[in-house]
Length: 270
Image (cartoon, rainbow, N blue to C red; front, side, top):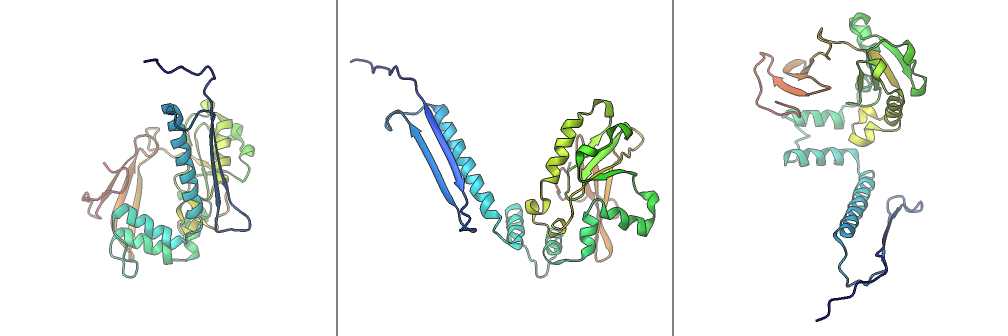
C-alpha cells in the first residue's frame, strides 16, 4: 500500500469575521462569517486551525450577546443577574433579603441624592455640608484631561480614581517609580467607559466623568487602612462590612452590630 503523498503546496487558511449592524435596522444585525481554505473540505484540519476557528466563533458569540444586551431594559438585566447569581427570581414587590432590598433600590429608588453620593466628587460636598471638611482627604486635582495632572507638584503618595465608577482606583505609593504614561492611559480608559452601561445601575448614568487625585491615607503602617461600611435598613444598622488589604490580598468579613461574624458571603470573604 502506498503512503499518501504530501502536497508540496504550503497549507494556508484565512478566517474572516465581520459583524455589521445595519443603520436602517437599529434593533437588528447582520452577521457575516466567511471561512476559506485552499485544501479540500474533506481533509482534516490541523488542531491549531480548529482552535482558531473555535476562538473566532467565541468572539462572534460574545459580540452578539454584548450587542443584544444593550437593547434589554435595565430591570430585565438586573433581575436576570440576580437569578443567575442565586438561582431564584427576586421578590421585588415585598423584598426581605439583603440582595432583594439592594435590587429594589436599584430599580425603584430615584432620589437625586443617590447620584450625588455615587459621584466621587459630588460626595465630597455632601460630607462637607454635614460633617465638615476635616473628615475629607485632601483634593489635589480634578480634571477631564489626565494629561494635565501635575505630577511634579504631587506628594510621593496619592490616589487616582474616576468620579463615575466603582472599583476603579490607582494607589500610588512611590511617585518616583510611577509610569506616568501608563497611568494617563488608564485614566483615559476610565473616562471612555460608562459604568452605567456595564452594570445598569441608574445612579451612575448622569455622572459627568472626571479624574480625581486625592490624598493617600494610611493606617500608620504605610498600608491603606481597613474599610468599614455600616449597612442601614430603615434607619437601623443591621450589619457591618469590613474590608482589609483592599489593594493587595483583599479580604472581607461581615458582622452583626454586636460584632458577631455572619455566616454569609459577599465576594472576597475569608
